Image 1 (cartoon, helix red, strand yellow):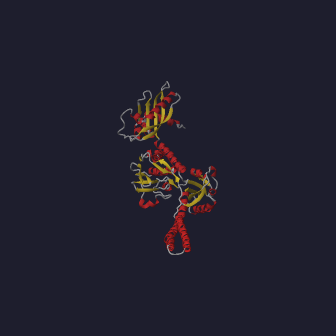
Image 2 (cartoon, rainbow, N blue to C red):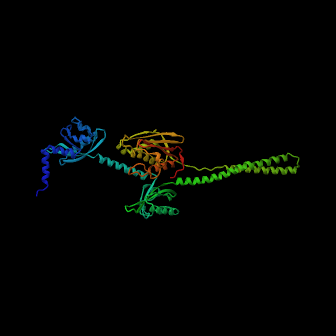
Length: 511
């Protein structure tokens, strides 16, 4: 029985004898073939498949014999020359691999894996190079995109003012994001312990009730406000969305918990309730004030007028002494009444905490740099029309989060049938610096969704990675800084988000 080795020899013979087979192999298996004269480096040959890979028309291939050199990026050609020189000097080296970048006809770059074979003469000198070129652009872009996505979500999980935790069905921690570790002073040893231990005792029944709802209605968010002590001592209020996650059998196996600090909101609610009570009391005081003005002071005035007339009369000295004493008493009472009026209109105020000034354009550029791979990959034109010296008073972590959400959304929901652009510009309104983020992407139908745009878990497109968290978080953070966020959008035209940053540097913020 013959061994399969004869097939290899037969194929080699056919390749030598029949140019059709050779052309088939280098025209279909490879994305390009390169044959280089190392003794006359200005001379080289590439096959037509390479030019097709670089976007040229089969009927209009470059006629210049050295056009392949111009197609290579100069830096990569220089690197290749150095690598070849080093490999050629090594008599034991016959093959090696080098990644090269070529210019496509449209100006974009193509990444090629050049698997090179050095052909040596009888003296061992490398005289020729045969390069089998494989297009690896897609793999390179996928790798770069994966890194970008990893960095993007790492930033979201690590830097945003949002806690993300998961527990098993028994309530034991299985995952905790960095912000939760940092704010509450825990370390990795918390994994596997009961999540109830981090909640103040009075709020634990509420937590258990919401967990029970997650088992009754899985995959549906359930809301609750729980109080937890921070690592530096104070107890903070946090708004949580609990959702039961099910396995393939439909059984709840995990609870996903997404939370954020609402201490400011709860304190403001308490302040509002207190203000309402104060307002009620103030109304009573105003009623009393009006009553005192209309009745008591008028009574004192009438009394003093009468006493003055009596003193002007013909009474004896004893009577006048009595009238004078009565006059002193009346004036003292009037002074007391006026003092009471002063107490009624006294108002107490509280101080505020200062934000930090940031150069807005500098922060925008930082965020664009973080998204640079996606922006370049999708050839998005970006315009930043923001003064370099424009300062905005903000919570730095919130500004980072807001910019990241808005710009990454503009990239993610770009229109694919037209050149994409993103424009950022600013203007001022009384009490606010307004940042507008404009794109020509997919847009949102505001006639149907205006009330849902900034809601939690609200999505408007079919992206698999959309979770409906970003705009909800941004709205919360802008409002925490005494600002607001608005949207203008039209389907298939684009969107403009306007972020109103309050110019008030004093704002009652939670830490």
